[in-house]
Every structure is written in C-alpha cells, then in structure tokens.
Length: 143
Image (cartoon, rainbow, N blue to C red):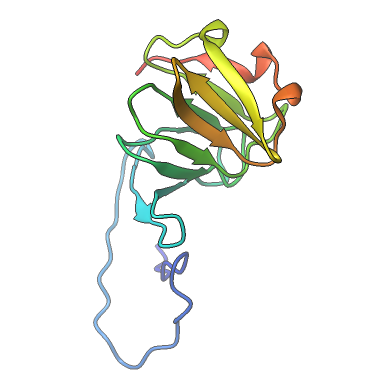
C-alpha cells in the first residue's frame, strides 16, 4: 500500500510534522466523488486514466475524463454540464433519462458545441464543433 497526497486543487505540498489520515478501500473500483471548481462555480468531476462512465449530479458540473474511452452521461433536469476533454472516436456522450439522438439539437458556440433538449442546455462540449458529431458519438444509457 502507498499513501500519496491529493494535489489536484492544492499547490501547497511542503509540510512540517503533521497527522496523516488515510482511507483504504476494497471492492469493485466504483467510487464517486466531486470537488468544487472555484473558477467556474461548478462541481468538478474528474475521471481516471481508465475507461469509465462519468455521471453528474443535479446541478452544473465540469467533467473531465482524464484518459481512456469515457462515456459522459447527460440527462434532462440535471443542470448544464461542461465536458472538457471529449475526444472524437474515443469518447461517447451517454444519453440517459430516455433521451435519443434525434430529440437533441446541437449548436456551435465558438469552438464548442452546446447540446440542447427541449430548450434546455444539457451540456457544453469544449473544443468540438457540432459538424464533427454524428449519431455514432452517442450511446443510450440506463442507470
């Protein structure tokens, strides 16, 4: 077992003598957590280098897959999610809550794509234009 300090939102890593707490888990590697992104005001949900499904919570989220072939699951009524590292041909947009590709509208917003359903913005996909998307980039998901 190894212990390593979490430094994703903390540049300060030099310490004097202190008490160290740790948490050891065993199981099927299903662990969910969120952090607060002070720059956007969103919850930050960050994946690992593995391929995984990345779900949000019922508010605006910033999601980063961080490697692997990820499925960024979007649902109606869950706020607007910002997806920061979507890779065409590698990652997918998962359609939860009985959403279908045909019911969506995609709009260019600068260098990004806005994913809309019934007038609600479900997600902003950074760095990808709507013309780059096809139905193959979307998969139906169920929870």
